[in-house]
Image: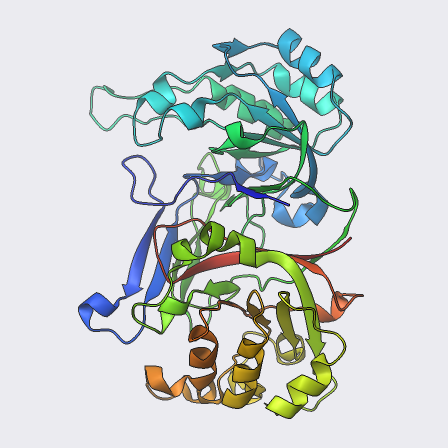
Length: 446
């Protein structure tokens, strides 16, 4: 199975106010390397819902996970300056009934979004095409161009650009469809169908979200059971996070947007080894920028029957993983901490289990693809709310990082799984930060 990355890189941009940043860095003498992200409604590869510009329209909460991940049909409309309803109808007539449609124009692979030609010379898709797509039963469209306008920044309006594809997006939303735009690398899709995932970040009542679409070239079942195991983001007493209302139709704006500023390793995210070990692997140095390790078969090791808090010792993890762990799997350590205590609770730290250093070393010796958890793994983490905790005190982190393995952290709802061997799709946002990224994580039971 090949995993194909279909996302643009989030980096500073002349048009979009969305951007990544570094909240801590070794280069300035900090003890950790930490990413940050400002999300400002749109930018780069992102997904939008009808509720963005339609008052009362659907938000992400109103869609099942199958609307964001599943078998997708590919329609190639490259080579045409404009795609009309007759052309799209002819293309759709040859496709099987699926929920997700990938429209490939080839534009993003030919012109980088740093250039204004990405907008001004893009092919257009007529608004009438949305009717044909909806009639064919699709509920989600992914395309490799932008539907955004370029606003004027001069008093005389010079420099603005009204995007003809904006009408196509509007028409899709009016028909209840999701849209992922600014996809990239679609020319690498050389088959008519792929298993495609474009997962929004877990933003309650969100209407737009950054996303990182990926395509799988093989898959065992068209209809897997999907379990969302991500922790939704909200304003938190500890993490450096600010979630707030951006544009609001109630305030007279033309859109409803949730914005956030996210600085550091909170909520569902991944850690690359360089997060705590200077000179260790960055997320970009991991195979396929981490995707080959984060999208993977997994083994669930269950400790949820134990009373909180408790230590996870070497003997305990060996006993619980015995006759279950498959070499090379992701290892998922389940405690149900978040489900029992609530992620917002200060008790979340104080009642957390902890992974003892020797237990972490045993896990590293098994050479898993990575380690997934629903609790803060180091005992010392319970002291973080009240004092500065030093890098070298994170002994469990270092035991895993010294084996050049990543973490997937702050999961929830692992008790919803009905198998000890799910397939995990943990997809980090594609940013130019090096130590990790926010993630949306789903577990699939094929």
